Length: 152
Image (cartoon, rainbow, N blue to C red; front, side, top):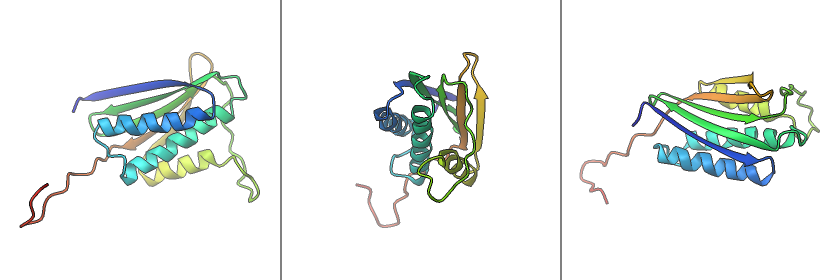
């Protein structure tokens, strides 16, 4: 595989774009060698879902679009970034039992740490922000047929 792969999609800040972002990421990662039915793909799908949902819900109409960027470096590290043009950084909210939302970044932080990754939030030159997650790239090995079995 190449030393560096990149993919990007910009979507409208609309609730329907969350599923479009998930589908784009899963399809792209499958093209890069990560099957959609793996635990790693499911974790990434959840992270993208939470990041895209935040970009839609918490920009209060001040970011008409958001962008999902993927970068794979030397088959070692995957970076997923979601950028919007709203200047306010996310705030940690107390995880009150009756709260219906506000736990997205908590989930993302937990999943990222659980998989040996890093979470970063940084401003963009244009005045918005990018929330990015960097994870180790783990593609499952192809199954090896057991002795006496033939491959289909």
